[in-house]
Image (tube, rainbow, N blue to C red; front, top):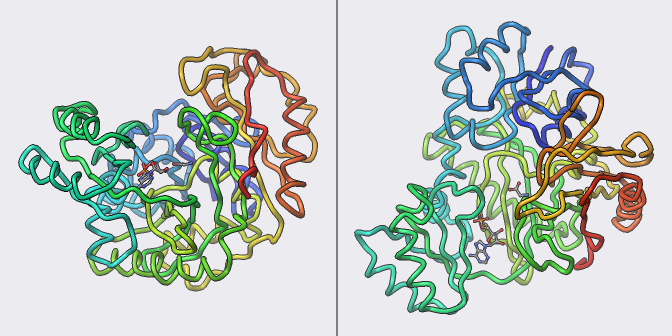
Length: 422
Ligand code: AMP
Ligand code: GLY
């Protein structure tokens, strides 16, 4: 069959690289893709939320499988759009409908869902201008630092962690007054949880699920986990503290109640669920849900999936995931993100990238790259994910770091300390 992957990052390149290895795939398309996806498939000049244009390219290219990388098209209802269209409704689409995407799209919904389904998470209160006084009183029973989250999507900037009560009260008022636009009309105030984070992924058909390899994402720009938050500077998988005992708790206390909660609440769901977890002294708590795979976690996790990924996705789309098996490689996989100088602040684009052809032993997943004539140039903050496998994390990291030295562009930066905390 022919497949279309929606998105343009390292995650989409990695998914494409993996499904290209399936005997079930003939032609592969990306909308819009990047310089790397263009080598393994065909990039189509289509915006990720232009559903009418996506429909025309799907029909023109006989596409039978659509994989939605990022959350935005899911929240805007791409799956609902396919389901309501007579020409598209038989096409497999990986990702939930709007009613499922709300798990990521509304923090208030996600917290309510966890409460209703007894899923361990931080204590919280949702505040709007109607119950501001209650919100201020709730802050008083918490201890610093204070966690304030815009209910809706705010380009990754909607979570504030604040040390002083005065500042927290001020920020709460500012958020409700529109600091993040409509996204912060409601604000979730949360108890601060102190622990170490881990990303756990499942693929599900709404009834059955398969657990993919877990990963740890390094979010801060600076070594030793310092400085500003980024989209992710690299990832490792497996995560040493995610022991079988810990993962058993994750499955019984978090994954199973989430899947059965979706069913109970009549939310049809097919696709991925990304559980952003925190490990507090061996006990897992949910920090957030995402309704897609993580980036850069995918670029590491995918290296460890031995099974045919298309077969699993067919299972998710058709409700037959119970008939499938997932085989995971015991090896370690890591990805090191090469970013633009200045990221996550302002940075230059259009810098020529050289050395990609010298890479051996790692897979080069393109994130923010594009083609200018024959040249591959930078076009985003996160530029290239260098993924490697090894018999342990150290060996895999050494391979990615060796190869990172062969790639050059003006301003290139990467963290050299991934795995330092393991
Ligand atoms: P979120 O968008 O909800 O994942 O929040 C972004 C980041 O803020 C998370 O990855 C955590 O590092 C941090 N965070 C969110 N909620 C909490 C919490 N309740 N306690 C401690 N840290 C948190
Ligand atoms: N790496 C975190 C995310 O994809 O949201």
